[in-house]
Length: 203
Image (tube, rainbow, N blue to C red; front, side, top):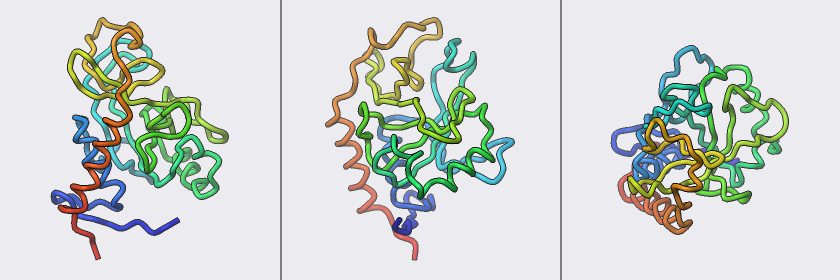
């Protein structure tokens, strides 16, 4: 794997260009994020981002409370292949050893979609379940909330970042259309353009 190039963007020191690109991209989607957050009761590992969710739904996904989603960024082309990639065996073992499984942790790769089912992210730890060996069955898609005109993440047809009312627990299949791939790719490319012109590499 190529060595990551560190970069400064908007006063933040990112450990890689890919992380900086995701920072710009997530912001353009309207996500409330923090880079390299401190995570209570987690030692020996620090995720790249936390996404603060807006929904306060009393359903099994959120376990009855507003649940932040922690994010890891890795330069892997197909996120569904993470657990088959020998380059990440030590990383997976670290997560399995250090991470608090009550905190949701997902992984994004170096593209806006994976090859399988147009997933944009896959679970490292979700619903207190982390697969030490073998692949994850949890995939995430970008989705579009017609009422708030915002892009969000969907998990098995349930929105986890959007503005659905607390008593609304029906499947989003009746509420949203999946975002046009081109819309997401355009924002992804715009993030790279901003980074090229405004980012500063660290020597």
